[in-house]
Length: 602
Image (cartoon, helix red, strand yellow):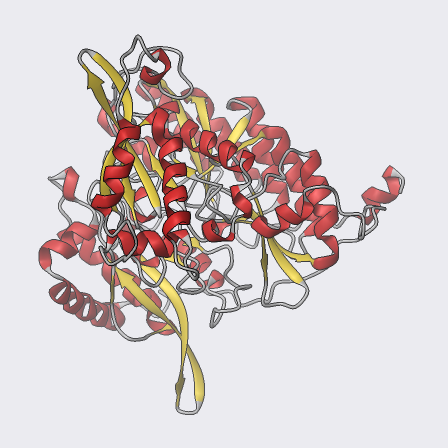
């Protein structure tokens, strides 16, 4: 096919339904930066302003920022990816980072250039507003919402409507702390019990007709101290979704602890007050909201059906000539949709990183292979293409292979989550970002992504106890710290086991401290012990759950038995014996713990 014919056959990139941007905010930000540089804006006030507009502080410097772009419900369109590629090249470091909360981040942006990024984003309807700070953060939705066989209806329109209602809403501009909404499709594909407000769509029969609604969980969250959320009531009708959301936000705004920054997330309020008392307060507040709000205060849910239109094939490759590695990739990266003949394909990234050139290529790949014409980000630092036809899977793999985006194992344990760690975060103690990449490379080398016993398990890593890497709900989780032998320090992690975020949500149990350079051997040893002691029906996730619960009847009956076997692997050598042990991944200098001022509660 000639280039001219190829261009004619490609569908035009679809535009987003919602313009999240306000172009004037770029000028406002630029003027405020000038005032700050002139000493007319004090440090604390500027920090709050900067965070409210989505510019996060960068490690140990005030001259650079990380710009966090919100993708409500995880939706991102091809033309938006093209713009992000352009902005990354012009103002960042030539790459972007997909977070665990459906944001895309541009790192190491000169403070004066942040407003230029805002201008570029406004051209394609994107915003950074309230992506940081004490506000309602990006409203998330499972990337499988709308295609999951187990869902009762698609919650995506409700997530988008909720995001639109609260964005720039005076109700949410100065909360005691950040506040998070998660929508999902079913119990298995979301983290609804681990956020302030988590929602699962459900239906019930009411007077002979089907009524839509939600199962709502409140007061969960990960952090230095984590809590699992509580279900508000048996069924919340869809007409009560906004009233319930407003009631919870109002209560948190009124009663949240604004003095003790370490305890001012809503989960602490719920824990201190007690669930029953908090639940009653929410139900009473909802009645007040329902009775006093104007009729114009409503959730504008757009139920316009998705246009599913197959792109014209632009390849002459035979369907039967699958490239080498295709079967392996397909197994660990694709999900069969409830729509017959269609698949959701997840693009594996290393700890969420993607180059600007890959963003540009990905934009075109979405146009050529996704029948809905957009990408959906998820909870695992990756992006999915949905509505990919069975016949297009092999050509899609070939295109991803050319772009360096065809790594296997996106939906397996071989794709660990790692927060940014010491690469950019002020609070980080270890390079969790690089460690997750090292684990991924080792697992793919050993082809562990093909092991069905490991498919449903997860590895999640945080550079400090604050859980940005979600370690508390991982099958095997780690959070960073430091340790020493005499005067010599080395990077170290606390390992937690048995966490999960499905219908049986539980937090991981702390086990033992593992030096950074021994994390991979320890994980491989755990897998080896699992293989030796598993029952026929076990996977790693179920076996570890029994071990941490102290109910396994194998040689390893409890977490203490596991620790005894693993402990010799964690013994530090002397610096003379192994100098590399005393440096972190990605560093050739001796390890030290040096942190700046955190901005999570600025």
